[in-house]
Image: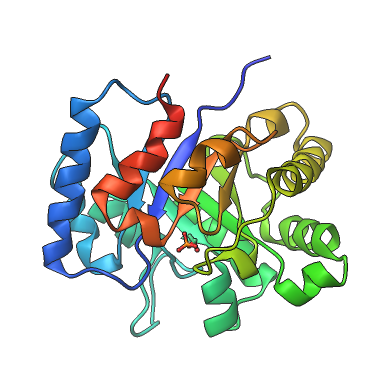
Length: 251
Ligand code: 13P
């Protein structure tokens, strides 16, 4: 059976002004200087840098966005639509990141509407799910994650228009990570749910892991069963570190 091409995506979050473009350029250089990685690479900068990064025209690094509105245009002062970021050069849009769920009280119904807007704009949604520490301690990880997934993913999700990002909230920015066995267990449960819902295409839908991924743990985490790449926060801000994570996909 075919296996999905892994995706290593950097999420710069609310970090980076024009100075940060230098790190993007360094990353492009590092990727061209090394033996080619067997994965897709993307950087999701703040909205303000999407056009500038896309203008670099790098073939080895796609540009993405971190969020979008559920409508493609209209009277929504201060919001940005999927069509706008696609026009600026984004190929991926993260929706449902736990920081948006927490900071802006975004629920899974809204995330699904945003994912549908991403499809309409013709780009790929990275739909994020993940449990909190107390949910994990209460043994509810699988229920929470599969519950979020069921509602957040539109019925017309495919392996082309969607990537699932599993990010345990307690592992984000904390330096803590689940064990490889724990990651494999939940990714395998997610895979089962995807195959049950989407048939064979569920095998090709990428499930990427996020939460304190670093060069030192990337190889181990990326070899876990049903892990098809990484969603990287802090360590994506420095080209050298991010390249060290991509290293997990070099022969
Ligand atoms: P860190 O890699 O900084 O833990 O962040 C993960 C994340 O939230 C990526 O979306």
